[in-house]
Amino acid sequence: MQNSVEVEFKTKKAALAVAISLSEPSKMPGKSYGLPAIDSCPVGKKLADIDNSVCADCYALKNNYKRYPAIRAAQFKRMESTKRADWIPAMVKLITGQEYFRIHDSGDFYSLEYFKKWLMVISACPDTKFWAPTREKGIITRFINAGGFIPSNLTIRLSAAM
Image (cartoon, rainbow, N blue to C red; front, top):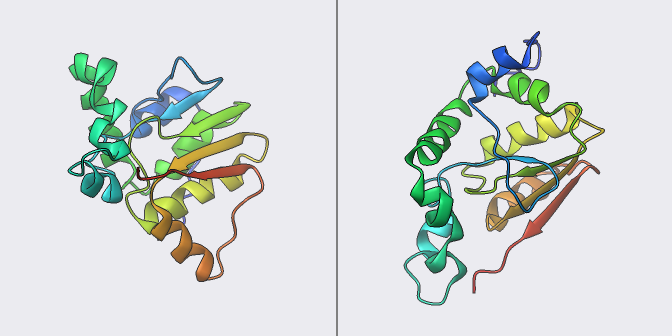
């Protein structure tokens, strides 16, 4: 992965041109970054077809997420933006100064590389407390088993499947 932290955004407007937007979940104390549900959820995509699984009744596939096409379009644009080399510094610019940040009000860590990008963002924002609900236990486990380190300002909550 290319180290893109060297890029610096002078304004939040410039950072938004890369990262697209931040979500503002009404039940959370801070902002978030939502991706399209199922499309960014390797485990969730499988669980969505299993009756009584939490993903069979995914909240991110209904309500405001479904009612407003602009929200869904922004989620897909955000997912594409995560593949950019300058996504990390854009997110650092947008998150710096936030007390709390929820990683994903919809969607999940869709790859190990994407998870590592978040860890770079988190490490660059030591004064922000991050919360990451996820069903991607395999990605987290592979990272830790390879000697990876979880920053102290990140709380990961592994979600149950059923």
